[in-house]
Image (cartoon, rainbow, N blue to C red; front, side, top):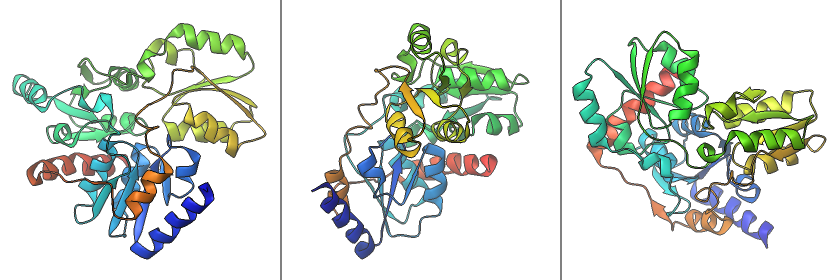
Amino acid sequence: MLRQIQDEILRLKKERDVTILAHSYQSADVTEVADFVGDSYALAQAAAKVKSETVILCGVRFMAEGVKLLCPDKRVFLSHGGAGCPMAEQLSPEEIRAYKRAHPDCTVVAYINTTAALKAECDVCVTSSSAVKIVSALPGKEILFIPDRNLGAYVAARVPDKTFTFMDGGCPIHGAVGREEALAAKAAHPDALLLVHPECPPDVCSLSDFVGSTTDIMRYAKDSSAGEFIIGTENAIVAHLQMQCPQKTFYPMSKHLICADMRLTTLSDVLNCAKGAGEEITLDPDTAIKARRCIEEMIRLGG
């Protein structure tokens, strides 16, 4: 049955001129029917080049909004309408406007895990893979980095010539994993390298052998001569890496590294979207114009 659903999706994609973009945290049955699979930055780059009239985003809402910002003339569907991101909504546009009034010389840097309304108040977007490069290239010295304090701290440590301010925000999944869990995983698997996402707390990152985005973690594991790895990001990556590198062994850093919103999307959701159902993403025109500049600046500076 699974194969039949996938075949029907592939048929509809061709018949209806549909492109499917899937985040790396999606399950294998979904990523197998996608035209492109990657992290947030890679999906933004792919979206900018999409030629199809219809795009289905398999991930969470802020990602679908990002596709719509870069493809305003296309129909963009979110595979599951309930798939959000708690971090994306932790701050309000009003809070950012108030900070900018009090600090007119600051550059507001928004992690891509934010709503379109929030991006509209910011100067540039970043992802975990592009943040250090982009912030280093900014002319201003005063940076407000939102919303993830952990990623912000990671960037600040690598861009010492700038002054950073953070608000109280972060990924509730990565941020909840503590040093004790990382140490326990290392003790259980002493020969394994620890690879973690910079959304994890600094004291977890300090124990790691490598810190990077989802794509960077996967690339590192594939290219490394090591045979065992502890993966400190969403546990879907453990499964993907094990399938792609069967000669190596992968362990989750924590059983709690599971994003419920990312797990909402099913193959049936993708099928329904390919048929023309599902939630179509629409944005206020003024918000879209301002937020699009924020993402376009990310792509310009990120390369």
